[in-house]
Image (cartoon, rainbow over all chains, first blue to last red; front, side, top):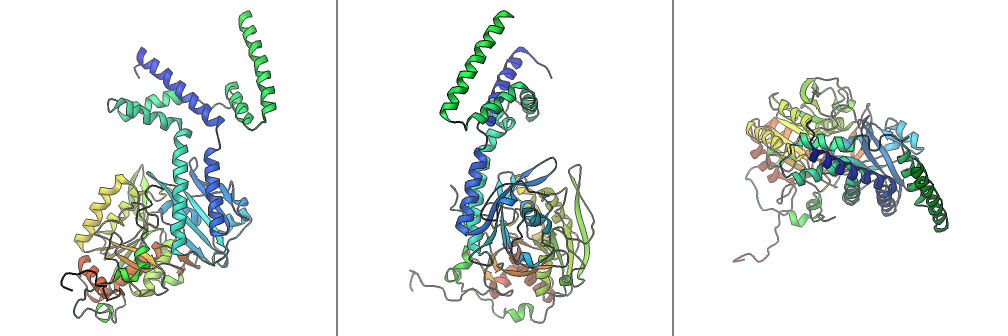
Length: 258
Length: 279
């Protein structure tokens, strides 16, 4: 790749954007989780269900990870991982088709291992895909509606509306989470066709490589600590600011002596 | 939430007066359409998760099993073990045999570890099926990929012109999905009346037909069974009816089969008179 002065300057600017975005993501982390949590809370409550949960697709290796759950029997699902080729959730994710099963527990073959891992074997399950513009990104599922042994068409349509909310939440926070995607979109818009996709990819990869891979880097440890400080009270925050002030003065002194 | 005004596909089948039709075809009744027919001589392809050939509900009717494999991103159709990853294809096969017990089933697996429902694999399975003497294809899955829009459009048009009836489940989620929204397929959504023979024709497409899809007793993987809800269980009911019609009337085109289905559907016959001129 030919690097001239303009490009170096542009790359520096991009790296600054990338770093700020990564810092923001670390410090403000959990927005997506909270949105998704509110959706499964509402779903479990509206359906009067034993559990509701959202699994999102992740790669390396390909898997569906249950990120949030609600309802009396929901807690055990969080963190559970299933292959996209497994069970109802895998099917709904892979095909984009919503479906519901009744009498699940009476069939000993039904995804029993995964159900056991959550500590709860459901009688009925309804699952709908979370579909964004590129296809499935995850699945919203509801277990055991208390008032009825099965799910009606109206239930499925209602569930699809919740799924759409979840997808909107994911899409809205994805850009914030995915620095590379953000930079790619900005570059494409700014370049207006004068850069090929491959050139954009080279630029973005140069700007984002190594930004937050190294968890041991003192800078990222600092950012992590700052992120944790979001939850401390006002008095403690004043204390932290005082301590940081001392550290900053010390650093200035060190620099002068050096 | 901005596009909530998109149609909920199942809605037409909850408003029966709205489905009222006057059209009749003289002499075309259910007896004419499939009286005495068993589906014998008709080959039905199921593009899905693979048929479990030795499942009791499939009664040894699976004559061939293939799978699409992606090698460096290019799809190849290869012979497949007769197993079902999820149970879904076997469920569809069982429903079809429930209506047309003597059809021959061909399993075309387009889901799997390396496929994850990739549209390219799905399209390759569909293309392969067009050259195999298959007259009915059941697709209880769809793709949302805009990039594959022209590919699916071309494939289902080719199927239509070759006389292959492509029966496609509408996506339950109110969003664009292919090929279920194309006019050359038999697009099916669910109604909730527990009767495998109850059929509605929807005069307001894209979904053209309604069949039983709520709390349907189905075959499931590993010789099992369960009860399920979804448009993907409505589509095989229509596929079974199409197979019966073609078994009694070989050579009917998809257009003719659609007309027969519309004529024998359970839609109310009385149309409300609303401000008709001269009425």
